[in-house]
Length: 116
Image (tube, helix red, strand yellow):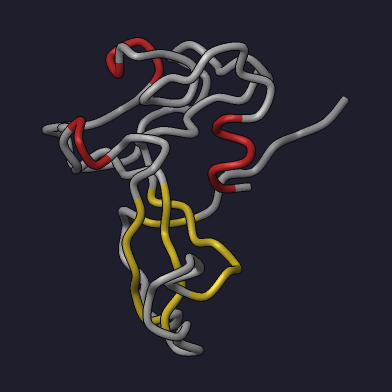
């Protein structure tokens, strides 16, 4: 999903998926050190919850996928969106980091959308 679903359908650009107020749409700086229940914050304009914060989302694209960057690594993949453990600066729509594709931790995962 990545940045496309986080921004898609937005009538105005926002820092976080669905708002400029991260407290209304994202879980971040959580003391309990775990993911939070999906759907308890406001969704973005497409009705998708938790596109900012809660878990870093693994992306299929190699990192970095942008112009003027070193060649993409086949071992490293992009993660987007920040997690429950990150601060507000790391949960912006544009936030990304890279990890070896075989690495796992409790702050990263997938975001799934269920259709009607």
